[in-house]
Length: 289
Image (tube, rainbow, N blue to C red; front, top):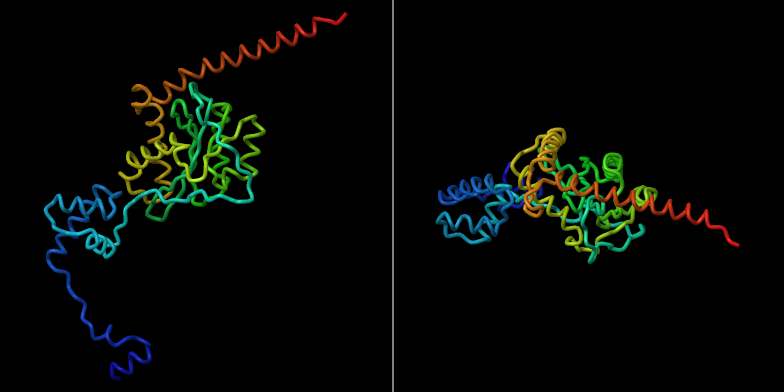
């Protein structure tokens, strides 16, 4: 059967059939090898930084050519994807309570957020709750779906293990504005604070923690499954809480700061309760004439 008829039956353009694929030049093969080496060392490099790294190696190449080669090699930089927590317009939004607030002790403010964790079988999602003053990771959960359940599980575990904070801060994602989540906070007497729309800096403590998790654990390993990711993150969070010393905490670990400030808070709360109790007793003992 003539090629013309074959193309007419398959509805294909003849130009694509006659055209012979062009083989890569030797120079492109060398650049591809370099791109693979650089990507293995720095998987978060996009085409801009990859172009700079190639020029440092002596290749005179432009960004558009690098982008084309990366697309041919199916190499994509690893970075945090936006809009992991999409807002629900029907849910109530709460004001941001942390502006100009001096955060001094543990359990004064907790914060939460969701990020993605790449695995060979697809992305899974990590939610964590952190104590703002001490940077202690109070609880975390992994899930392969973006529902409210795994966020609630993390919240309940944190409350069971560490008590309740004065303020709980989150973004305006539908998981955190849902009735189930907000009612759990309100029933425990916790004030609700939410970031302004598009203001990641309002929750900067956990955003900074995500950077540590990604660059010190996730990007260095290629998880095959969510089970392997859970094991790796569990080991890292134990290191993060009890061994990793933070420059922002004067070289102390999060657990040292948390355990060093929580007794003062409990003592102050106890004194306040005793003062209120004695005041109530005094009021009862004073009878009107």
